[in-house]
Image 1: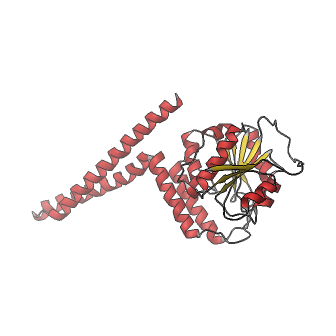
Image 2: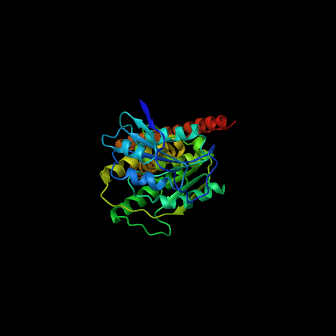
Image 3: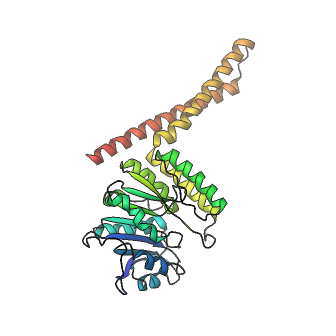
Length: 317
C-alpha cells in the first residue's frame, strides 16, 4: 500500500538556480529507509535547487517520513520495506504524473552534496544528455574509504563490460534524468541496490545519451549495509541483467568456450588413438558432452538474442 503523507510545507525557499515553469517542475526523488538522522538536512538543502522534493519512505520504522514532511518534501510512504528499486520506481511514477521536466536522484544518507545539483542538471537542461551521472572518480577528490574504492571499481568494470556503456562510476546514486529518460526508465522490482548498474543497461537498450560530471561525496559514518553482502548483491544483479539484456553474450561466450574445450579434448583423444591405437573412452565421452553443452548454449543465446531484437524492434515501431 502506498500512502501520500503530505505536500511541501514551510517558508518559501530562495532558489539559487533559475525558477522553472511550474507546469514542468524540476523534481528531486529521494528513496529513504530509516534515515531520520540525515533526511531533514538533505531535503532542506535540496529544495534550494529544485521545485519539488519527493521522499519515498520505504517502510521506515523511525521518524524519516515525519521529518521529511516537516522539511518541506512530498512524502510517499510504502507500508513495508520493498527495496530501493521499488522506492525509486514509486518516485519516478509520481514525477511523471507531475509532468517533471527533469528528475534528480539523490541519496538520503547525506553523502551527496545538493549544492552540486546545478552542475548535475546542466547537461540535461542544455539537451546534451538524457542521463547525467555524478562521478566520484573524475577530477574531484572525494573522501572515500580505500576498500570502498576498490569494490566500486570492480563493480564498475563488471557493469561496463556487461552493459556496453562505459562510466567511471557505475555505482553512483547521484544522477539527473531528462524527460525522455524519465519516460523510459523503470527498474526491475527485485533490482534492489543494483539499479545503478541496471540504468546502464537501460541507457543501451533505449539508446539514451549519458554524460558524467565530477562531484564530491562524503561518508560521515560507516555504511549500515555489510559491504561484502552489498557487493555480492549488486554482482548478482549484474549477472541477472546480462542474462536479460544481453543473452547472446551471457550464453554465447561461455558456450563458445565450452565448445572449444570439447573440440580440443576430442582432438587429443583422436591423436592418442592414432598414436597408441587406444581409445580413451572417458575423455571421449567428456569431449562429446562438452560439445553438446557448448552448442546448446550457443543456440540458446542466438535464439534469445533474436527474440529480444524482434521484441525491441516491435516496441520502437
